[in-house]
Amino acid sequence: MVEEKDLLGALKEYFGYDTFRPLQRQIIDSVFAGNDNMVIMPTGGGKSICYQLPATLLPGVTLVISPLIALMKDQVDGLTANGISAAFLNSSQAEDVQQEIFSRISKNEIKLLYVAPESLQYIDAVFSSGKISLIAIDEAHCISSWGHDFRPAYTQLGYLKSRHPETPIIALTATADKATRKDICDQLNIPAAKQFIASFDRKNLSLEVRPGNKKLDQIIAFLKKRPDQSGIIYCLSRKNTEELAVKLKSKGFDAEAYHAGLSHSDRIKIQEDFIQDKNQIICATVAFGMGIDKSNVRWVIHYNLPKNLEGYYQEIGRAGRDGLPSSTLLFHSYADVVQLRKFAVNSGNSEVQMAKLDRMKQYADALSCRRKILLSYFGELISEDCGNCDVCKNPPEFFDGTILTQKALSTIFRLKGQESISLVIDVLRGAHNAQVLEKGYQQLKTFGIATDVSWRDWQQYLIQLINLGYVEIAFHDQNKLRLTPLAKKVLFEKEKVRLAHVIQREAAKEPVVAE
Ligand code: ADP
Ligand code: ZN
Image 1 (cartoon, rainbow, N blue to C red):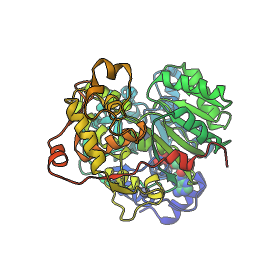
Image 2 (image 1 turned 180 degrees about the vertical axis):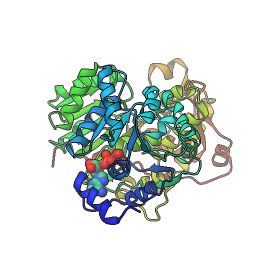
Image 3 (image 1 turned 30 degrees about the vertical axis):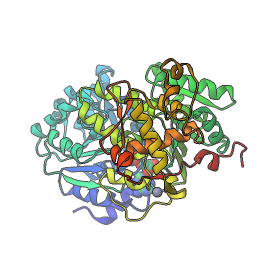
């Protein structure tokens, strides 16, 4: 029904491209076939064309529900500049402006109309003004409390299909695991939607995780190797973003803080300057980046552990949208895990959030190809190791860690499971600090039995023991380390334990003197 030459002609005429990216063509065909469609494509994968191109060829208006009110104007300006007539409707517009839009719809002069989910009161008026050929729901994961960015206004969108069953819907998102996908389709009343799941593999993004010690020094070394490159540092709190930006500025870097607490105009200015390469480094909360189309972000650092892999994947996905090699670096610390657990418990959806955090932690602690772990989370299996993550580049070497493990486990045993990781290490290393002396731990038989292992290495080994299941953290009881039943196999039944050598990754890969 739509001919190949029309599709390619529109692709060239309005967007300037000669070929479709993977899945775009199939999705567009399915739109023209009148199906409901669910599209999962990573950030930068090219979702917009999947509804913008059909919009140029369909007889009526394509209605786009998009949460990004702030960016609607930019989107509309961009489309208009490409020769596609587009407009947006929201409650801040004067009545005559709105009337003008309705009248243009009735004259069939608008191809794409953007509406925020909060402005659904206009929908009936839109439908009665003219023909609606397609409804596109962008950032569709916002409808699901299973997703990571739930927006209450989205839950009303189910209304669209029940009220206008004849109008096909295309729902698009960059992030949704299986449960979320099903939830999105159920809530939108499109249970039979065709599902299109693009590969999430972004091969040009290198993946790296490091222990979160001396983060500022590590970041400075990282930046010195990348002069003039744009990047984003994601932090957990607003305060973090500001403090980090100040510190980086004092070291001569071009850094700005960005978070939802800034005024609207400040936020717009920082975004614009970043997009136009007028500032180089943004220290931001996760509020930054949604919908920002900047193709040459060369790196993304996570100063803190993200809450879940969806968020992490979306945030690192802001790097390298132009397809060129880009770096991502995640700092992993147990302090963050403890903090995020608190958030999860208080989230009202604690079981789900906790399970997601566990997967995030498994990724950060991984001793095998990280990309495999990440992609498998999104339901995609790759057979080969990726070669572009820190584990692939620097595979762990294992050694017989039985004696080391016995030392750790018997120390935890003697501390009766009453102390957190740092005090366990202090005892192992024979530290004569106030806390140790106050509690009389210098009397313990295992006091100072492993001074040859550095504090930081001990931390890594204990994390491995936690991941191997010999030790657990009592998150509900001041993060005390306790033995699990498995521990007795090592202590009393001669079970051998293989541990991975701690690799001094940052020392090996980020010389402080720039190359
Ligand atoms: P998403 O919404 O999935 O994050 P976009 O739709 O913003 O991605 O597309 C990301 C970038 O890829 C944009 O700069 C877009 O112009 C470009 N792009 C999309 N489709 C194609 C294509 N077929 N060929 C070349 N570039 C494309
Ligand atoms: Zn790998």
